[in-house]
Length: 314
Image 1: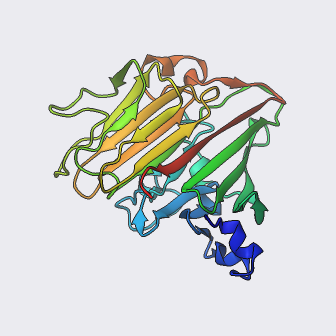
Image 2: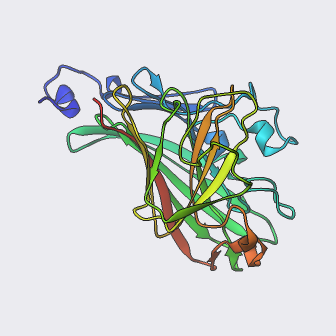
């Protein structure tokens, strides 16, 4: 079987950009990979991921907001969806103290943004890198050094972060990777498979609802936010069927030991959020120091991240 790399080796393809295209335009880095995914990297939003396609099928959810109204509005008003929105490193969940909902990462521009394309084994690989700075003159100074990597022939994208405390004081650093899955992969009866002991919900569970099963869309259906307790394997799978393959989210379980989900199946919303995290999103633990988040000591580093893949059908 011919590999994507062999197409350039034997001269059937003259330029690797024909197989691994990168187009920088309008504040978006558009990556298109033969036999892989097509996705947008968003430098103005912390190198998070926007629209994402598997062949001709969208993977990522698009929010009902038609446009970002800009600074001064709340996080939900500015949230346009996309495959990944990173929450933290100052807060996750509801506003807390001087920190707004879901923190600052997703609305902070990255600096030193670069991209590269190189041959790796039998594939062409695209890598986008940059740094997102969460710093203040007299307070915490946290840097998130991000790498987004994907290859031809593999329907997956991996986001890896090195989180550094470059300040002189310990800092509680909550992180949550808000992976947003939408239709048509998200469909009535779709089930998220998670190996966990049990789950707890933020609000009382509405009748005939389950945190891991998506119902038919209907007007006014409430969101269900849940934490899944005793998660094993650092893996969650939106189970496919005869038409759609599995969507698999994996993450670094040692630095992201918790998993939350956000199911909002209302008409014109219809989203499932898969949210690996290192801190409580709700509940009494948020009354602990640093809202229950782990502390990153001065000079210390965490390596963390998430991978989203389409697996199964070809």
